[in-house]
Each structure stands twice: as structure tokens, then as C-alpha cells.
Length: 263
Image (cartoon, rainbow, N blue to C red; front, top):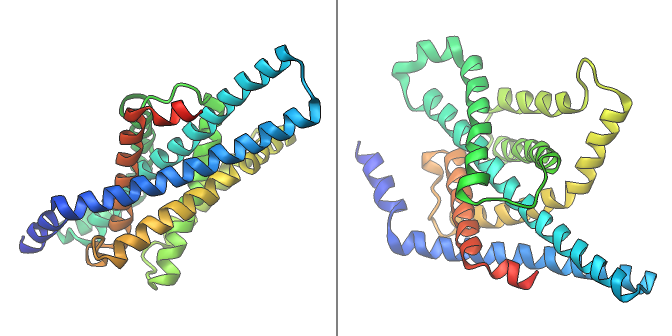
């Protein structure tokens, strides 16, 4: 009870949380600046190579705007999707490690509970990208590709915990997510074209995985370095807290409408 009270006092301290939110927001702005600069360079390359007419230039500008907004929303979607999964993985961890009274039922039904948690994470992601921050440009197909990439991202987090913190409690989860990712490529009625389409989506969104890894890696490192994030409450829970601050940063930045102004 005392430990829980300490965690609440620590994480809800306005000075600690406010400083961490500011760092998360600055990190997000840097990520989006990279996306904007890369898109602008691609646009200039296309204009210089084609030497378009005024009408074609207007079309290029409109296409550029839609593409940039789609990329930005794809990054948001990846953060939201990863957060949703981490919420239920943290709940999975709490039930397994922190509630001994549930041990009998847990070991009997943990596979079913994990499946139920992952299904619930889909609905939670829907809430994130429709109500929390309404993503208007990104297509359903692109969302599916981003969520596939987020599965690889979750695997990287679990591998990080396993090898850096020498924690083998997540081995079954790593295997589960690997099988889940493979299942998105190869299923009972899949065709070569389906597999090619999935691979194409992964390659197109691979830069998102790199940006997400750098962004979340820095936020987590900063949190542990400043002792705002605590390993004592579980690394997976601390990682979730970092992602919740990343979500809050997206919400704040979206409300300011600065991104649309620069686009």
C-alpha cells in the first residue's frame, strides 16, 4: 500500500510530470520536423526532375500536402497502436507478478486472457485515433500496415527488456508477437500477391519504425536517467508511462494546429 502511494505521489508530481511532458513534446516536434524536411526534399526533387506546368505544380503541391499529413498521422497511429498494446501487456504483467491471489486462475487462463487483451487493444486504438486525436487523412489500408509495423516495434521492446535487463518473463510474449507478425504475411488462403503487398507496406513504413525507436528510446532513456521512470514498478510499466506522455504530446501538438500550418 505504501509503495503504491509512493508511485502515485511520484508520477503525479506536477514538476516531474510537467518537465517530462515538455521533453516528450520537444522530441515529437523534432520527429515531425524530420518528416516535413524529408517530404520537402522529395517534393523539390520531383519538381526539378519534371519541370511541371502551373497546373501540374498545383497538383504536386496538393498531393504533397496529403502525403505529408498521411505520414504524420501514420506516426501518430503507430504511437497509439503501441500504447494500446503496452497497456494490456502491463496489465498482463501486473496480474502475473503483482497479484499472487490470482495465480491459480492466471496460469490456467493466461493464454485466453492475452488474446482477450489484444482484442481489447484494437478497440482502444480505435478510441485513440477517432476520439482522442481524430486522424482524418490516413487510409484504413495504411492503418493496417502501421499496426503491423507496431507489432515489430513491440517485439523490439520485449527483446530490449529480455537482453538488457536479463528478464526472461516475456519469452512467451516475444514468441506470441513473432507468430502474430508472421501470421500477417502467411495465412491459410494467402497468395503471393498478398505477401508482396504486406512486404511492400512494411518497407514503405520502415522509416516510421526507425523514428519510433529513436523517439521512444530517447524518452525512456531520459525518464530513467532523471529517475522519473522507475524500474522498481516494472520496466514494461515504465515504458508504458513513457508512451502515455508521447500520446499526451501528440494531443497537445494537435490542438495547437501548428503542424497543419507548416504543411
